[in-house]
Image (cartoon, rainbow, N blue to C red; front, side):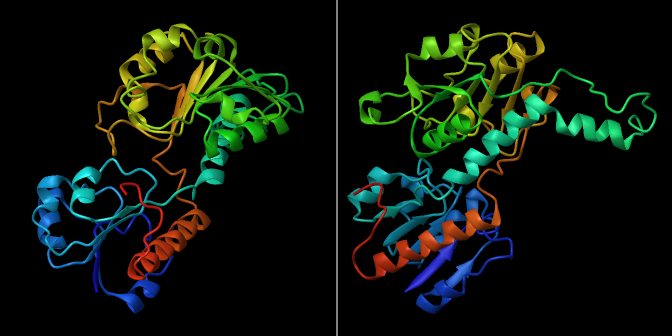
Length: 319
């Protein structure tokens, strides 16, 4: 059996191993694959492994040997799953591998917005503390999390983990989800309408999937319902934000700040409006990138490939 990895570099830039896959298959690994080379690079392979390289119907129609598509991600919108299913090609994703890592980055944003560690570190390195007449100083207002209200939009595994961390900080937790009845036994969380959450939350953090309903959900109307002192965090999917509206709100004081790990286009265009906002923290889609997180991803990929070869595919999203 032959397998190809179309864009392996971000998952494994050299600190992890594909040796387990080489023992099972004749393997070819590409760091990156331009879209126009996708079909040619996939021809003759039984197993196609991809993270962000799309496999549309037009491409899959050119790949009669394809028997299995294995994702290096949880999201699967880059695959024409309906066409793959019609061809009998199972598509397996990597579920729930990054829950703790994404929750951790969510609070890295929150803590930086409230404690301004980077600003004060820079001031100290400039010699400002050495010149200070007092034993301490601060350049911006600092905030405690205890007693603040955390509003969580989306209550899957990541949202639930964020809620637990917030509760440990002594925060009041509000959540909005399409199915609140599923969580009747969850303690320390109040399930409310989206409007109520936006009106009360000091921090709004997004943990919802990208769907037609959530695409562009965070727009001027959404923001108008938030406190002007509130922070917005997005570690879900970039297109959930209307970035122009968020940038306008940040520049005009309609919200106090934001932290985002994902953008609508990645890497971003130089004119992305959020890049010009001083009160917007932006990281380059790193929530999933810790060594331990990527190792967990590869371990699940190994399980997916082994299950397919054994004739019992798991974690399928189209069958």
